[in-house]
Length: 237
Image (cartoon, rainbow, N blue to C red; front, side, top):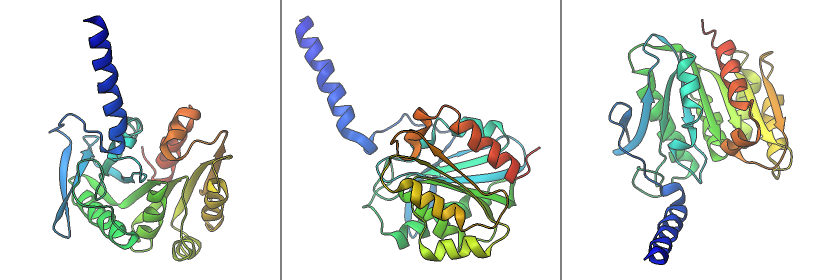
């Protein structure tokens, strides 16, 4: 009997691991929201600090879902930020198949509209963060939305149009992070940050080869650094 139970436990654990980015989480009615984008409800999580203030939209990397940000979100909210995360098409609790870049940016735009409509959000002080593919989508979104004052980019690539926008926008600051041995991540992040003329723009290259939000596990100070940078950039009191 004990052997059978052990085999069952191993099978359950293997099934959970194979689910990967399709892992499900318990319903959270206090925070779970639907964001309509081109007729499709994107499943999201919205967190309010309980008072008026700036806001940040977080876009997950394309092998995870919105819960990739769960360890960072409480610190952002505690600092006074309104936070919205969402599952991209075909990820987590959102139906459909993975979108191309054009659709992914449209969905991010819809998510930002949703966030800006929330009570207490200061639409003049908005940041967007992205990891891996989310870097491309975040940077592209900034070219369309001048109210975005800060970008947090983890291990990803900003295209030529986005870098030109970063270069031409004095009001947009960029904080980029990458691991030194994760392919071309460090070079891509340095290129995005170097495009900025804003004095608050900065990069952080961490040890190892972690990619995206997994850098939170390899650099214990990274979350605190991101929160402080956003607090300074968005002038939180």
